[in-house]
Each structure stands twice: as structure tokens, then as C-alpha cells.
Amino acid sequence: MAKACARHILLKTKEDAEKVKQQLSKGADFATLAKKHSQCASAKKGGDLGEFSPGKMLKAFDNVVFKKPVLTVHGPVKTKFGYHLIETIYRT
Image (cartoon, rainbow, N blue to C red; front, side, top):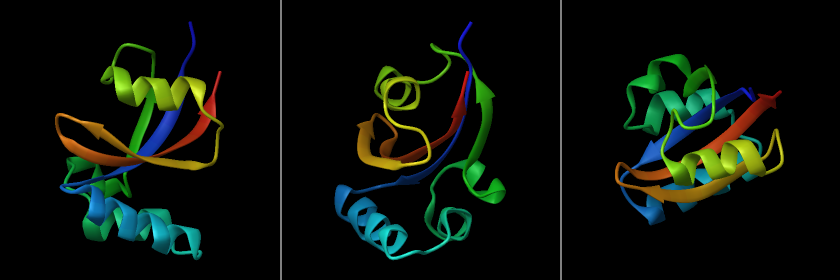
């Protein structure tokens, strides 16, 4: 079965997500921004969600992690929790 490792930054608004994504595009450190801005408990680990299989996350989240290019920040991706910036570290 496929598995992936990803990290994310969860923000309340699309505008906040766009601002953080701009900082990332200018070379800011993902983990540092996750610790500072993310609304998720994973913020303590720099947004690291560890390894998981398809179906463990929300569909919109899975679509990015299992279908989009690896090592690229995608988003903002809207879910019931807010807006995510998602980076897939690896996929098997």
C-alpha cells in the first residue's frame, strides 16, 4: 500500500496562508514558520505529520499528498479545519 510523509502549516484564513506561502517562496524555513503560525498540534514538530496511508487524512489533503509533486509546497488547500500549506516529503 502507498505511504507518504508530509508536513503542513494550518492557518485560519486563505489570506494568512497566502502570506506564509510568500515567505516560503522567498526561502523562509518551513519548520520555523509552522512552529510560529500553524494552528495544528503538529506545529511543535515543525508541521511534521509523519508517515501515513491514503484515507487517513481528509480527501482534499490526500489529493495533494498522493497526487501532486513531492518536495513542493502546495496550497492553500481548504478543509473543515482551515487552510493548509502542504509539502510531501516522500511517497512510496
